[in-house]
Length: 239
Image 1 (cartoon, rainbow, N blue to C red):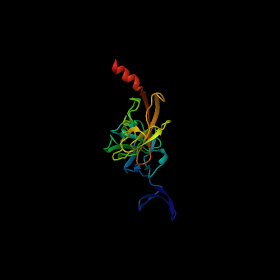
Image 2 (image 1 turned 45 degrees about the vertical axis):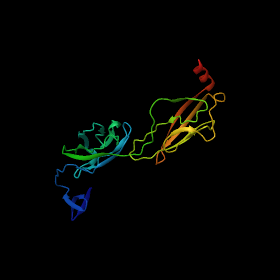
Image 3 (image 1 turned 180 degrees about the vertical axis):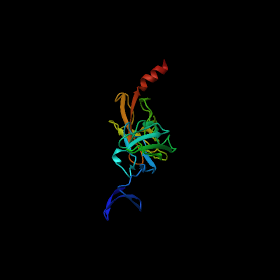
Image 4 (image 1 turned 90 degrees about the vertical axis):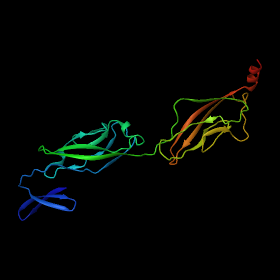
């Protein structure tokens, strides 16, 4: 930081860095390039396009800090953009910021130029920080064709979680007839205790099941169950 100090009829520019302090007579011409922080950045994964990630911290010790110009000199990710006037960094390619695939740190080189043309190049270490993500399901509809009277199991809803070591818990979200149950640990779907599937009562069941991770994030999956008429099946077998 800097400021002005008047003492014994002289005006000094005060330059401070941590606990050190330097007095420079204001009448003297100075040529000090911008001071830029090289503190490491840890960027939370999954930013959106254009999302602000932070701002490069810089100061002009002997000039107007608001007149500095910022630029990215090198960025192996190719996924960052910098505001030339403010030093604000934004994400341009969110795919890079996936903790599960981008575990290696990288270095961004930033150029900061003051109003007199003095430039500072600073290497800033970057890394992607893990963020808990909700469970996911494979794409596409899940449809089961079962015969009436079948107790199950009918299948597994197949949830997955990209977060290493996360534990999922399964539950029934939608079941108007109250006929189905799901194993809370494995996700395997069966009939509820004492329930039976009857074609004449209902040939179609629209269900939904929930997978919830240890942090409480959840995702639902719809399942369609078609119940076959066992009399028709037996008749077809006889033919």
